[in-house]
Length: 116
Length: 111
Image (tube, rainbow over all chains, first blue to last red; front, side, top):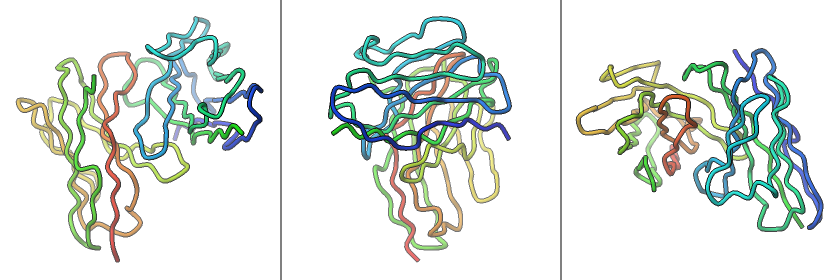
């Protein structure tokens, strides 16, 4: 089946540094990618939607200058958390969709970010 | 605005029992209703999904019941096993938009 690879699976960084998370679709072309954030014991909250070659659309309350999303190819999207602070510590999850099919929507394994 | 309401928040079931998780939605534009299973530190994995033109779908021990008029759907896990202990999320999708998730149910199956 289709696989979405997310890397790294966990990262620890110092406050004020930037962290990049990669999301790759391994055997399909991801027309759209979504980025979610999940705090402990909470649900997944959509941060932004990105279409290949276009600027990402951010959800209300998500700072686009802090969470930089790049979707430069049909198989790769990146989320960069700039000037990370402890409150940015969370579990970040990407998902990728092939075309417009509801059934062809797949999730990455997530990245646990801890900001010291 | 919480568009998909999920209950219960947590559930404890004995091994071999039936686990039932319920969800209700508000947006009638939703046309796809998946259920996801998530283990700690992992991304969600699709369990089973249903479209609103079907009232029930069964895959192995997992069954979705869908009531379009009531705007409710539920997940039934038959013969629950300790390995089923995880957090379950219902979700809903409309068109090309992103999934809207329920709040999650932490299931514990006791041996």
